[in-house]
Image (tube, rainbow over the protein chains, first blue to last red):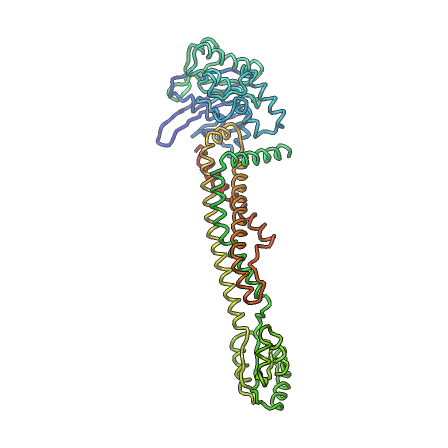
Length: 217
Length: 302
């Protein structure tokens, strides 16, 4: 499903975020990327939807070398990936419902079908009752769940989340991870970056430990 | 196909929504564009009126040969016969002095003057249409004719008409230059407005791009916004033009009446008015295109 082989990422200025990363994820797996902040977790995740491109090595998603994809092909790659960003990237000028509708706007669905999908996604994360609220009115945990709803509304095969439990209390963090686990159970491949060792322990699945730009075994 | 149409509909709705949400700013933009566009459009309309007014005047050169009043009839007849066979002429028309007097009498305000004359002061004349219109050939022809017996004066007419034609050509060029300059200005105005609009929607654009929106999808509402803004500017320009011509025509009507004419400055013909609207909408679209493309390139991860 997703495989990295000898991937390195250097930023202009010489900073080396990833040195030599190789791993692969099968379809339906649930994996954590663990490591301290600055270990390169975010960079690694950004290579999958080609938000960043590797300096060397290959990142394959469904057998496609995404680092070599043309600009015009990127939107179609990204639509098949559910992305939950570290800063959530919600839009505060519109309702919870409209936030979830955003990725459906550039898809092929009709208005009514899109609305149905958006409500289904909100229901899965337990936010259907708040669909008319503005995201600022939501708690931290609710905002995170909204970000997940937007990520899954296009029914992606892969869910990728960067520190989805940062700044959440233990209960909210658990609730958020349970949502990911539920999607994993219906066959979605899940890849989560976190520095929260306690959570990794409780949801013990495959763990890739990233230190100084390399995967430590 | 249906999804594509739906996306266009939504983009258009979004563009109109933005205009409605920022009425004052949108109105000011339309005004700026409208004023800029009204200048070349107005120049074009004035030129159109001028052309219509001078359409009756021949731009073809004409020569008038006036005989001396005391010229012998035989000289006149000989000249007439000679002119008929001159290869340099396409046509020659004889205007006898009696007919000239009659024409003069028929001219408004001159009947009484003519009646007061006790004899016909007008000479016999020939009106000639030469084959060649170039100046040296006309001069040579005029010189030859002046040397003939009985000829008092040879006048190359329509020089004024040619001058007017040259003047109109220059004016048309000046208007085209003005239009080109203002078109650049308009693209710059739209570029800037769309840029400001982009900045207020920065988050939406960035997020949309990250989660799979195509560039075309992101551009589309801005295209419509640019085109709508241009179109509004075009409408304002036509309104300004219409109002200005109406105001000018009060004075023009008075002036024309004193010359016994019903000349008025005309508005643009419908086709030209439509062209102004399409042109301004197109420029708005182009300004938006430049602006959005530049921004999308800027936020592209390296």
